[in-house]
Figure 1 (tube, rainbow, N blue to C red):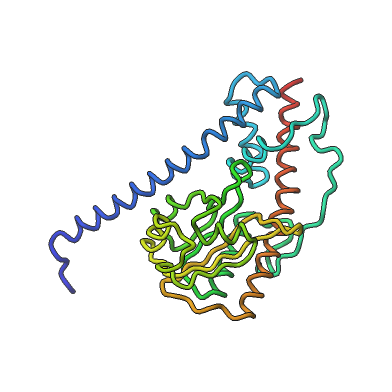
Figure 2 (cartoon, helix red, strand yellow):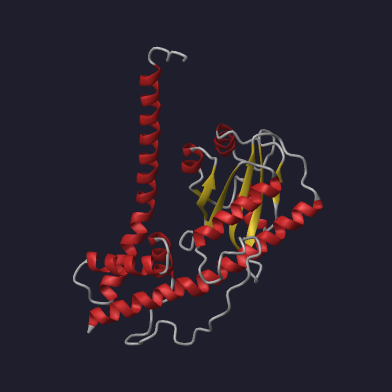
Length: 283
């Protein structure tokens, strides 16, 4: 048996503690970004349904979040950006037309329609994109309803520093921003040389071990970009073949249609449920 070098156990403990603290700091930053939006949603609900305190509003949101498997931040975002229901109306969206769930051919066959979670779909989109591009790192971003920026919702293989730096992305300075702006796939064959990045963004990408990347917009039937999936490679990339670009384009369109349907159906179902709960508190 090989003897353990002196100090190795202490060094391992120190590394584990550093990783734990970094994860804790990242979680605190994420909560600090989400808290103002959730607090705004609580205030709206408290006023709308004459609730005695913010805790009651939070309870309504939590119940709707759990019932429809929707993140609290996502629910808060749709709540504050959706016109309020008419006073006294039983249904928030009385004339809403429900559309059938779009097919998702890239998901496992055993995954039943109607039982798919948004997180599972985003994970499958990322996995399939990495397979096609031939990369091990990547992320999925969604267009934030409130800010209009791209916000990371799914990732793999990326550093904590990368996730902090690119927590939200505006309209300029990155390949994913360009892909969203032009609603077109963007390949960065060499991060060190491509002018699409600002220098701080370039440094953050390189520090994560990415030397090349490919971004694919997720598009609704209208052609609007609702999100972005990006693959990062640890080596410069050759141009992708036409058949791979077609595969990724089909993936982006299929996923985008499903995500738009989810927004129009599941998220609005969650609001309807929340409205019903709130009205019970009113009477």
